[in-house]
Length: 381
Ligand SMILES: Cc1ncc(COP(=O)(O)O)c(C=O)c1O
Image (cartoon, rainbow, N blue to C red; front, side, top):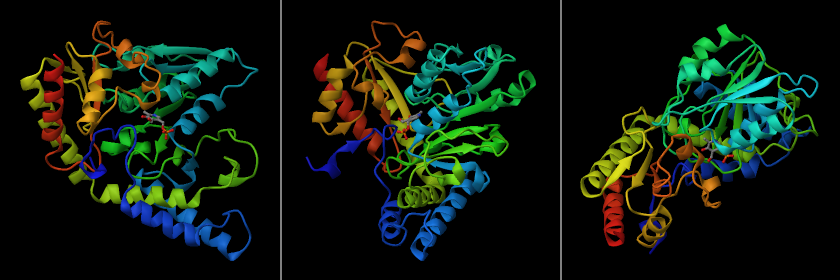
């Protein structure tokens, strides 16, 4: 099977680069290749391209240019905010987050607790939603950082970020409110200031940009300590030679995404709904969080009597690429912490697959994917 005939429904894990981003990358490598910190013309060209990209990206998220710091991706941005505000001399401080966050947040939370601070988790309900009041209940006078993701990467369930942000400051005005919006930006419009998010993690490769590039939004009222130490790049906030071509490609991908947003997200929504309807009519399945407000690109399906590891292989052999959940966890073959947090019956926890649509989704993909799934599943029953 040629790659172009293979149906890719794993956009929540990563997406192919948009042509506009790839073109920009190649163009930028030819004139923006110089070190953006240098003192000659080529460095100035590179620096101009960097600042131009920062401006474009900040505008798209209603942020000031100085509030965007480029990183190697969402993982680094999550790590940075969560870890860097905890001071080893003030061990009474705590972190509040949820038990359905991405591993980048959960492992950072582990780091916080292993360094002697307290970490408190708001629990998801059976639909994959963290209740606003449950989350706010955990905040106290010692909460340094609170972190709640925009939309979950395994279920797509949208979390009450805006509702939490409205009330969090009345409990503790100095708690920094972080949100991992890595999946959110695939299919939702995010305005950091209007959503009350003070720090946000962004990743380029989920929206048609390059891998290894991302950004952190940080409200200008905060000055986070540097996370990487070395040179004085990124206004002394992040050391290391800046990947200007990658960042320019990120900006190009976001610009293209914005210009086609309604069309692309409309297609994701339509194709997901055709896909879900069709398999629901033929197979004994459950759609995780079906009644909830979900990011329109994600569909997490529980198959009644089918092990998803085996089904995944069958789908792959039949030209459909999907995943068992978070890409970071799938290699480990561990049950998903998100499904566990939702109290999914252990009998069915290994019967889930995540199908995720994205910017390359075409009319007909939902129906084609459903046909492949139905055929493979029927052969396995
Ligand atoms: C919700 C969420 N946060 C963080 C990440 C990590 O982003 P990156 O791959 O850019 O480090 C991912 C990627 O899978 C994600 O889905």
